[in-house]
Structure formats: structure tokens, C-alpha cells
Image (cartoon, rainbow, N blue to C red):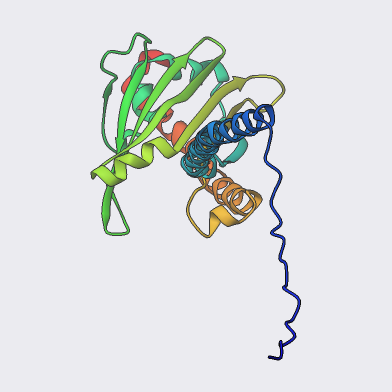
Length: 261
């Protein structure tokens, strides 16, 4: 019997990871647990940061419109006028007229008003509420209302606008929060020299909120320059007319009060 030659047996040796010692195994478990414990904390911090960022963003979104509406255009104009008094009339004569209660009708130009009356609840004497005639604007009716104070003295007479507001629809009255105005008209008289005269000095200031496009996208000078020109043109036209009207009213007053002359 013949014996067949056999191939040598292949021997495979499995590679095993070293078995950790008890102390190493405990340390690994503690490290794993520590990482798992820190994960929720990291998530909580990230969530908290995100919420904080969200709150800041919300504040910015809410503050942005207020910042845009906070842009204020300041308009101003001033006009001085010197009116020569007629022969035989002195500055003191005109001053006496302006201190008389009848002069209020002339100083407030009540003929151009819808109504006027002493201001209700005002602690300051010589304060009047004046309603201008209603005007149409973009399909709305607007009634400007002014609170004016008349303060005559022995040397001058001052008319100040204490407040200005619009009355009308709700949308019109909401505009009162977006602007403010101030006006001062100081009238003095003098007998110096050969030509006694009446001096009128009017100042007008208006502050507007600029928040509508396209004006909100432009520099404030784009609103202020044309606004100043408009108001200056208004005063240049009205102040000389005021001086002439005062002299006419003075002549009428003297005719009604001969004792004053």
C-alpha cells in the first residue's frame, strides 16, 4: 500500500486585542460616561446661545424702524421787516394800540381764522386757541389748530405759538406725533431819528420725522434745503402784509377811539 503525501497543515493564529486590566477598564468607562454627561450640557449651552441670539435679533428688528423714524429734519426761516410810521404817528401811539385788548383781533388776524377763543385751562394770560379754516389735502379735510400767546409790554409785543396740531380723521391726527412747530413774532417800535418805525421780527421752526420713502433713503439735507426755501418764501410774503395790516387796524382803532389819539 502506497501512502499519499499530505500537505502540511496551515496554522492560523487569531490576533486578539489585549484584554484591558481592571484599572484601565474602569478609567475608560469613566471617560465615556464623562463625555456622555457633557453632551447634554453642550446642547443646552448651544440652545441657550441660540435663544439669546434670537432675542438680540428680535430687538434689532424691532429697534430698526424706531431708528429709521428717529431721523428728524429741522426747518427754519426768519424775516425782519421795518415799516415806516405815517406822519404824526409815533411808536408810542402804536404801542398803546397793541396793549389794548382790541389789538388781539389784529395781532391774531382773526379774519383768516375759523374760530378763536381764550385757551381753556391755560394758566398763562393772553393765551388763545385759534382754529384755521379747513383745507383739503389728498382727499382729507385738515383743520390746523394753534395755541398762541400774546404778551404786550411797554416796549414790545410778542406773539408765540405754544403748540400746533391737526384735527380731522384718525389718520390725520396721528401725524401730530411726527412733527412739532414753534413760531415767535416780536414787534417793537422806536422814535429814534426822523423816521419812527415799526419793527417786526418773525422766526419759524418746524421739526419733521423723516421715515417714508424715498425721503428716508436720502440725506436730511434733501428735505431740509427745499423745506427751508419754502418756509422762507412764506415769511417773505406774509410779514410785509402783516405790517401793513397793523397800520390799517391802528388807523381804524384811532377813529373808533378818538381819546386815544
